Image (cartoon, rainbow, N blue to C red):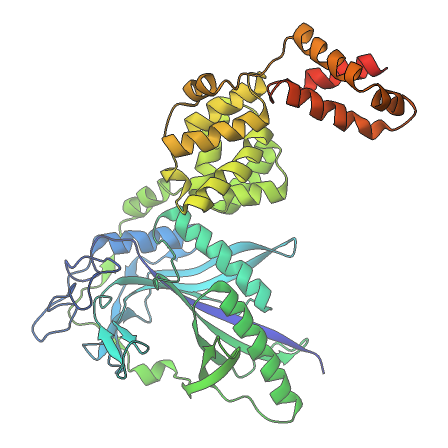
Length: 474
């Protein structure tokens, strides 16, 4: 029997607010353990939560960008469960009246466009963090307690592990473009749980699902899903039944392991949070937030392909990151050649950014400076090889490229009479190679080009030299 997999994702995303969701503690990563806390985020008796308005705005931005409807009234609830990293013994979250409902995200998967439905987006607070690998005992850091989250829950629309990966990439890009999260999985800013089941091909009824946790990268999500789908098929194929449970992904062994039986909503004993009044929104405020949404990644990619006549692959690379896309468009305003700009941004700018381990916004090679260098390539003031030298020097010394070109003597020789004298000299010095060329060894043109460039110390205009060679060699 042939089976299909049915996958839904739950993505927890930390929001880029200055302070926590219900108190004035800084929402920062990397502080000394248990130093960024207060009675509110520690759940002390008598302390009361006060909602951070910026959290609500960011949740609405995420909802609008994922085609959700923004509910006119939203209510907070207490989700009751006990873990050592949850000081209050309950988590303030949302249940039956979340802030965003019924959205969708278009993705590209294996060359085709697909749509993954969004069930809901709701706001909640993060618990603390348990650390198990630094001591014989588990350690507890409550700095993260009270950090604002949105949880994005998808419909069970995903049909493969690779499609789940593509969805997560698309969602991450949207959240980064919106500026609501840095989506750093290493720091816990983005965490993903996956619900997966299988069913006979053509069946509409959902099978028994398992939930997979503890995946710290998109590739880990993909690998865990591949394993779990394979495991479930083997279980059903042997005549056994799938048990509804929560599983942990063991990245060292590449297997899932049982953690506990899977909870349902009633296990959490949700009830309305008595210390927070319901949220109500004016239409004008939602419209104002929507007005300032940025152009989203997929639309920007399509515009790059349409307006700049870039290939799908080039447009994808340039729009993967909003800072890179912005950088490209700033350079284009100076250079006016989209393909030349794209090639240099993708090769040299991303190379330097990777080598220095900084974002493109932090480079000494600003868009204005690269635009100037590319303009010099276009008017043949410098060669592409010289441009690479200038780029490296600009980044090393944080100096103006025009000054460096003059100082390094990189101005290209384009005077035809001067270049013709050089080429004639090369041909006169290599009569046997000239004869072989004329007898059909056309690849020797590369030899003559190399000798000519060497004679001009790399300053000769390659196009002019090639034209002169063609003329003199017949």
